[in-house]
Image (cartoon, rainbow, N blue to C red):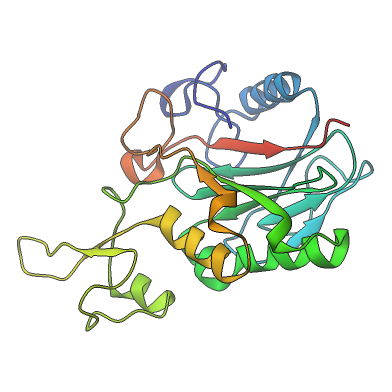
Length: 238
């Protein structure tokens, strides 16, 4: 998982912006991506993310960019890094316990509610014969539960209702004007869906870090509006 430190970008993208579609100088993004790849010692494959549920299989012949739109990727090839970009959304990295396959998913609330994690699990099971119970999962830095204020539309996306006395993973926090708002726990929502799909709770870990609350380390679209992008990557070394 990258931080915003160690790159060449300037202004709101300073300094290790890895996103190519957020207004930064393309030459700076290319230089930053080269630094990121060098640090990995693997070849990152950059997805064209759309907050959907499509999951691609990557291999050593996959192009480094310009792929069909997707928000998840998996591979069993060595040295190919499944990579997702985030700036408050939740990066989810998955690995088979025997190391035979890896995957990454971009889980903003829309993709999460639509089933991007379930699609990633299904892709691993169908393509790599790895069952959910045999995975280890890491939930990376994202907008934290004290910062992610949402409305009833987000509750509805997860099948919850404002009439619920205490919707799970949502804490009621009305605004001063009396309008109803909630604080959403994105990692908890992801963990619940993973467990419902068969991943053991003990196999799920997380950073516990909030991108909004740590401006020196993380970009945050919710905090800054104009913002760079962080990257999370996972790959097989052998």
